[in-house]
Length: 55
Image (cartoon, rainbow, N blue to C red; front, top):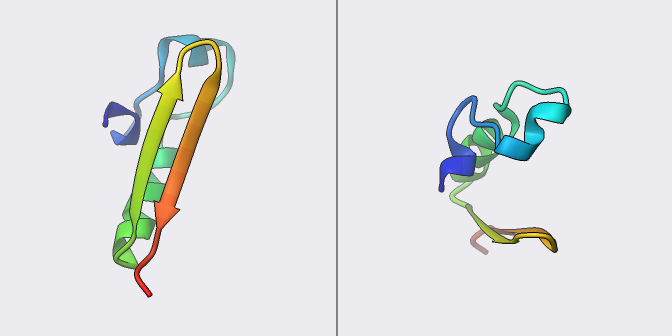
């Protein structure tokens, strides 16, 4: 997913401060712990992130 690319910022993010590395770093940390992160987005409704870690 492109939201996990380093320095990626969505078109609507231009009005908000940030560098675009937050989700990139988050995904890398989750993978270090053998976890997985998924994103589901519905335009105009919102976005859901699901994080799973092995037992």
